[in-house]
Length: 301
Image 1 (cartoon, one colour):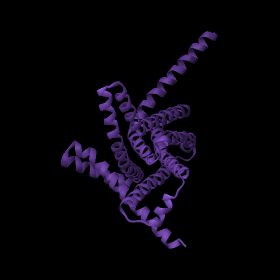
Image 2 (tube, one colour):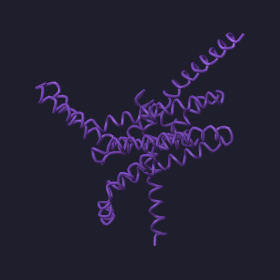
Image 3 (cartoon, rainbow, N blue to C red):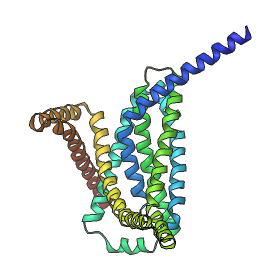
Image 4 (tube, rainbow, N blue to C red):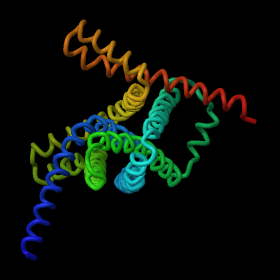
């Protein structure tokens, strides 16, 4: 009797694990796009940090990301049970904040700003600068993690609460390890190139020399690209959240996508919604930034 009960329990556990694995695969596919944005944004966030501090900064942000998800997973489960209507407004606020951050970066890069603030920024203690970098990265991660959690929750909405919780935990762990493992690898590419170059001199290995020089040349260009991609990702993700949260915008996006498909076929079908999300993100970000500047100008003493 005891043996039969044990076998039944093991069978139930196997079925449960199989269900979780299947749902996790579906959720991973649906959140893959956000994962790419998360990678670009977080790699960009750690640029400008001293080489010897890159991995400690990535680790600090990764710990913050785990903490974000430790907050978001139970919060998402509670909201889905008690306040499901609150999910969309919270995501909308997060989307607007991403657009705002992207627009701020564009303003800072292309528009003239106060020299005094620049000189004050130069005087920032390196430890304080690093703390600001970590805080900014964790803040951005919180919004992207929230989107990942909500998308995952949507894919397992019909499952039992225990299955929802387990799938959310699996996705949270996999996404965090995957993103910050890749970020750590990206920021240390130049060190790997330098190591291979030094090794090639000791062993006269031409392949190591070519690979080392290639990594040293590619590392700064990759970081520049990720800095650009990170800003673009803010507009794409932020605009995409607004589109999915506002039905009127979603209908317009569908119309634009259909028009793009009619004009240039499959390419238009793929690019049209991305362009629409990006432009919407830029417009929303500029509106929020201008509103923020107007607020500061009116109420600043």
